[in-house]
Image 1 (cartoon, rainbow, N blue to C red):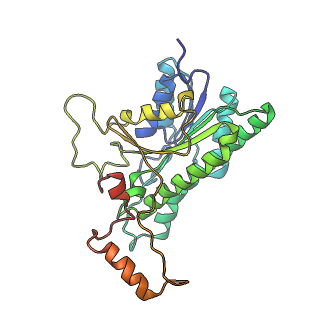
Image 2 (image 1 turned 30 degrees about the horizontal axis):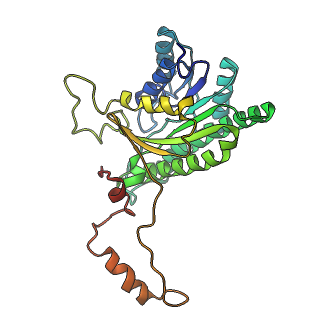
Length: 312
């Protein structure tokens, strides 16, 4: 009996630990050959000396279980190293079929205290890192499609966050990057559909070193699988990477603890028309002020209300 991803080759970034590790192991379990990418810095803020150990350990796990894997330790936020990552998959496995973008760092600070480098570094790793790998994977698929004169197989799974949906007061850099990833994903989905490629994004809730503060008050159960374990997220990534998800494109999905929610695009909540050619201040005051009266302070364009998500 064949496996869903048998004969396919994947790249998973940030795969040395946490979510990326669980996703790489899942893709391998489903039959994919996997390039395990991780820059290997120990600090969740991107600090510390880079190390090959995290990527190599996960690649070793995959090979020990009978799968195919290659460790890659490049920095995906570096344009040339991202190119080399995609090229390494093609050189090792003959092609690239699946790209899972997961690499990221945190440098939390309130917006009024954030330093320029704290903003730039998070945007660089999350948003630019997603773009870099996507750009070279997309070029690979476009070239293959043109050569074949037909669509090819391609899957992109990007990692966003509910911090973009519901807000995160101490993470303006992270929330902005994760929102940008959704825009990148939907744009990519439209651009690559004719080549046979899909692009989707997930918002995972999982207990990792990136979220240790967020879930500090939620202890792991003494028995059974932790509902916030990364292993709950990995099956959705495996599905989105598979032929079964061929009609799923440009979607955003929240996933955690045995739950998957498909997020709608933003909808218009209310519409107001001026009685003359253009609005005046007084007319806007008369229409909009009553509309917002009584709403919670700091509500973000209805995302929390519409999506049924909890803050934090």
